[in-house]
Length: 251
Image 1 (tube, helix red, strand yellow):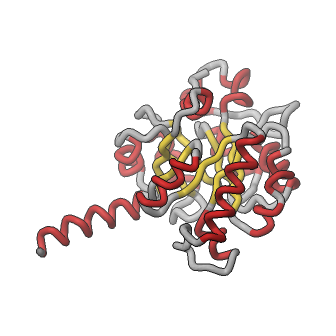
Image 2 (cartoon, one colour):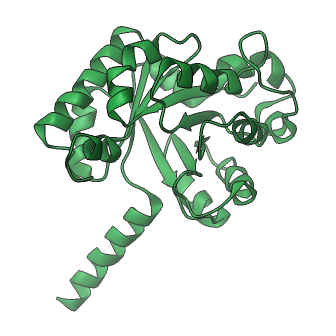
């Protein structure tokens, strides 16, 4: 089976950079993936498109060296199964608030006896290889989003779930939960929460990813030792570069 580069980088203790595809267009997803990211996540939670659009986006990402990841819209076995069958090599699941949530998520991502995933990876076999079934459980990356007070409080129980590879921190929702605005990543309450999540995860040998809304935040998270960071969505980067060029030309 094709290797998951995120697992390789984690074993080598090297940072992975993750692109974020929130516009439902396969060509744009391919362009993002071709920029040099180690992975690109197709976002079904906040992306304004359905699973029908996600499949050609995964196909487009697969033409590059970036690993195709997804953020599912919810903790749903049916949706997660379809996305994995379509060739996703990792799943970020939003709103994991308890050990039970994490167990349900992990079960959806693994074949028996480690889970309850149904067999039928039509495109997964095309991308991963003919021995997909034998290695999928050890190749697909499972990351639980921690973005609420409940998830923050229960993180150690969540991390105790067998076969959960790690967490993905949602700093904007976490800031809102802590009574702040979504862009308050540098506030001490959010900063301490993020450092706590990184510390407890790494103490268990678990993976830590995080979304960063700015280069400044990404640099701080890199210094904190996260394993994967996302330096903005396709929309954010498109707006930023467009605004920068217009600003230069308008003087």
